[in-house]
Image (cartoon, rainbow, N blue to C red):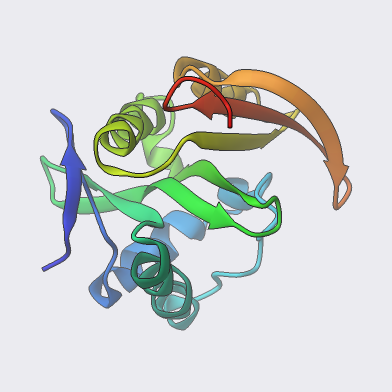
Length: 175
């Protein structure tokens, strides 16, 4: 059994386990899913999905006490994507992120799951500041970050993309 982090009316948010590999592959497989993520080609098959779970997410849970979490649709018990936090050494900060299979886009799951994660973090995590980086063309994700209460703080270039950076202060003021 995977540790349940939090729930909403429609969703269970829990840690991933190796049994989730086919679901991880499924929500990463459509090309449009990774169009703006910078990690296209990382999850080409079930074995890649197992490696992501084993070598990234399970390691992060052990090391930091958090990582990307599975989003499970209560009505079907299906893993439809991920949400939550990642300790991101590349930016020397914690970022919030999400990814869902396109069948579940536009239904409020990214906002709903990450609002639940933010609420959980405020109550149970020693986390003060969270960043959200999004490619400027990804207008739907920009809307989600704004719905999460994140504030635009700047723009930068990386790997041929222009990204907007958003910030959320969970405890009030920046350090």
